[in-house]
Length: 95
Image (cartoon, rainbow, N blue to C red; front, side, top):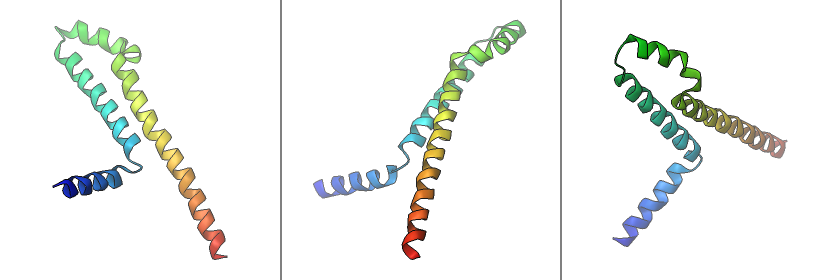
């Protein structure tokens, strides 16, 4: 039983390798989308919707959405930079 738990933990660790930031960004984005849905459901009329649209840039959900998208972009840039270095090192070894 303990070996199964250890094997599961190792498999989970291997699966999450280099994916932790993506998972965190996805969670932040999903929370922002749920906040948007909650806000949309709570409207009492068209006036509330218009006010919400005007204040969308300063909305807390918008800030969280942008943070999540920023994490995706940052992780992608870092991943591309490190993979470029790895391929450059492999090419130098082959020469």
